[in-house]
Each structure stands twice: as C-alpha cells, then as structure tokens.
Image (cartoon, rainbow, N blue to C red):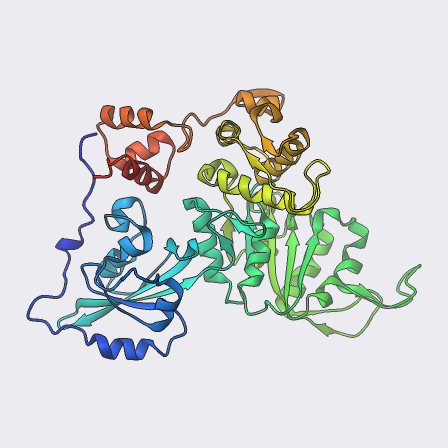
Length: 467
C-alpha cells in the first residue's frame, strides 16, 4: 500500500520553545492531588510529566513506569498518536482550538479495556503558546469494553459515540430522546443514563407505551382517586408519582394517543398533574427519558404526534446504532449474552452457572449476518442455539439456516448479507494481499473493508504493517 497517510500535523503546530518557561510540575501535581479523579500532566510531545495519586492508584501497574512515556503508548498501546490510529486525539484538538477538548476513549487498564471520559486542558505560556496539558480521566461505569454479565457492552466507534453523548447529558436535567431501531437496547441505555445521573438513588420507572390501552393511559400515568370510576375501590398512585425524584422512561412514546399527548405536554411544562377523579394539583419531579423506533418528526407533519410535545422531549436526542453498524462488537455481545443465558440457567435445562461458548466458525457466521432485528434477534438466536447444543459449544449447525447462508427475509424478499468483509473473517494472508494491492489512504482502505480506522490499524500492527 502506498503511503498517503496524513501526518497528524502536531509537530508543525505552536508548542513551547526552548526560551519559554517550563511548567512548574511540582506545583501542578500538588494542586491536582486535591482532585479525586485521576489526572496527569503532559508536554506537547505527548510525554507524561507527572501523575496524581488517584491516577497511580487507578491506572498504574506495579513495575511499569509511566512517567516519561508517551500517553498513547500507556493508554492505548499504540506506537503512533491517536489520530494516526483512527482515533480522535484530544491533544491535537485542544491545540487547534486553544481550549479544552473532551473525548471518550477505550484505555488499557490493570482491569483490562475500559471506557474512559478524557478531558484535556492546555496550559499556556507567553504569548499564548501551549507549554503543557492537564488530562483528567473518568472511568465510565455505565458500559463495559469487555464481556459482561450485565449492562451495556461494546467497543465500536458507533457504540462509543452513543455512550459519549449519554455521559455528557447524564448530569443535567434535560429530557433525552433515544432514537433507534427495535432491538437496539433502548431500555438498557435509559437505565445506564439513570445510573450515571444524580438521581441514581431514586426510582427508575419504565413505561411501555405500546402496551397500554388508550382508555387506561390517563389512570396509569396519573393514578386515580377512590370512586373515580367503577372498580376504583382505593386510591392508586400513578407512574408519575412512582417516579418522584427519579427517572421516568417512556418506551415507544410514538404510541401515546393524541388525546393523552396534550396532558403529557402539560405535565412536562408545568410539572403538575391531577389524579383521575381528583381536584388536588400535585407536583412532579422526575427526569424524562423517551424512546422510539418511529420517525416522530414525520408523524408531526401528518398530525399523528404533537409538534410542541416533540420539541419538548427531543431536547437532547441520542441515536442508537443498529447492530450492523457495530459488527466489531458482535464477539463481545455473543460472549456477554452467553454469560447471561448461562447464569440464568436457561441453557437447555442446564443449571445456572453453566459455561457456554461459540466456535470460531459460528462466530464468523454471526458476524457476517446483517441482524435486522438487532441485539434482540441475536439473543433469540443464541437462546435457540443453546437448546440445540448438547456440549455447551455453539456451532454453525446450531444456527438458523438463513444465518448460515448469510441471507435475511425482508418484506418477502430474500436479500444477501451486505457484509462481505469483517475484521474477524478476513484472514491475515487476505489482508496482506489487500494492503499490497491497494494504492489509497489507510482511511480509504478501512472504508473499503467496512472497518473503522482503529480496527484496521490494530490488524496492521499485529502484522507489522502499521507504518
């Protein structure tokens, strides 16, 4: 492959010169010791100058010094800066902006790969030249970068983008609208948002709007007084009261009937409501998170969804990627789902704790399939395969025929899987041949293979071709 890869450009950007004062590292570290979060001091050449105790405790490894080493070597095990490995480089961005930059990265830690929220702040000398940086690292607990028996799991760029947005909005009070196809894990994302918010000690109340009859919406949401209607023998609090102080998650909000939408809008705008059959005005305090697989904006145009309600609930929309856009996560998801099936004792009548795995051949078939039903479909396929697998190892013969053949049924039409390349199904020899025959940039090659730049960089590095 011809070398047309763009240089990061950092060396040509302003940096501290020899006659500029060096930062007082000892004073900086003394100040940083008061911060409970891990923090390090970097020079413009990526070298770690110092680290506070919190960093050494959380990210340090006994016998492996980090002072004097490049940040990308320590955090990512890269031999080039992040932006040359297909990542967002906060140092480059902070230098270009002359202001702080924040990004979510996957770091190597003593506990394995973890999602880390990184904020980089430049330190200026005269005249406005960067002489050092302070980097603050916060481990993201709402998602796992390795197989996990619970919660969100993923490492792909599309997944990380959604997690990064979630981390930014979680501390605020803004309503959040989760947008994505069915089966993309909207309830898990909503739960993770709640767990990352200041309301974590209060209730997380899930409302399946598609499962409530139109005539029952108001009483389910707001509750009712005794005698409000036939059968109302006692007062019953509604879901809004149950969520007091916490998070109210309205799943499939596009199914809320128009007659109820105006009352929901009033609840959001005024924070007040009345129980059915009651006269007392009650006050609510909850964080609203809504989700839908429908195109709400199109529904507002034909009158099926109130425009004013749409703009109230969509203050911070987060798009959740379909599984076909995060193929690099499929192995992680398979391992995680099999852990959960095994722990629940649902593996073909086996008891809880039974270990389940998938063969390499089965994984290759699962990675090549486009998954129109997303993670929900993947779990259903694995549950079925577990029932057919007597030895606890899922093989291609345990998978549905259409997945083995790489086809999917849609609207009565059979479509071939659109994925012809996968980071796990392209062999080393095939990749070497691609590299030798390809004359474009690394970014173009990654696009041609259907990978992220980071995935390509890692495979090239393993083959000694990263330069």
